Length: 344
Ligand SMILES: *Cc1c(COP(=O)(O)O)cnc(C)c1O
Image (cartoon, rainbow, N blue to C red; front, side):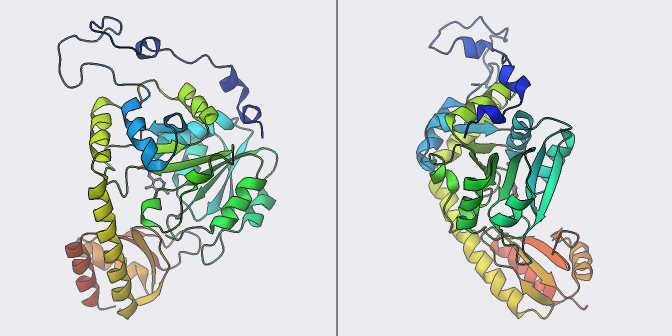
């Protein structure tokens, strides 16, 4: 597959902005090249445009090379850049499964890109053939979310792989919840599939949603394209410092993931025994999608108790469903105690 043929002509021809920190990367003693204020604070210098220190530490954790990593201002930045690199506004399309994460459609809409939505099965399972059938020659990018938000389940790996093999465009596998899943990351397939981009994030398991730091992993060629289009200094110095520190303390995150998974099991067991529960969908994530007898009544009741969950009744197959993030043990106890007191 020739990736350059998938790229918009204007992006292929683009001469990227060359920053001071692009033009000189060695060790200097006196930096008079970027019109910064010379008086030292934590933030008086421009940040590393390519976040080299983070990538060096992240690469071994993810078993990729630093040049296969893009870091963005949240995954949202990666989604937007991928759409802008590969899809011609007003002409080309993306394809997504439904229900799925809402940002793919919003980002496509902002860029004037049509969205083809292909329903998952009623159990939120992904069937490659169904999506392949709907894609046409103008469909440049597919977004698959695994584990899927809002359903929580990991998509069948064999079906996802079959899709990557057969789709004649870029396939983005959004793995925002992979750290909670027993499924393997598709990062290990990057060498086999030149059209594959895997997205992950520091917002969920890593506990840094407030930083805004997303990751994309792909071939060096695709990462090169994203680097060409991204704003030069897209990750600020404070975020880079915080991420480096977090990467040196991976054990803390692993322990938190363990606890969250135990708490998820506990919540699952509790919900099973509650009379208001209709069905609990299987979850490979840090949240549960639960179908209730009367989701609206329960949702309003919980808000009155200042317990906020996500109303997902309007999404496809989400009838009477609420999406509930696993909290701390205390928070989860509060939630279950409140529901036990609920009088429908
Ligand atoms: C939460 C989430 C993200 C994370 O987005 P950020 O911009 O990195 O915070 C990405 N994809 C999905 C499916 C999510 O649920």
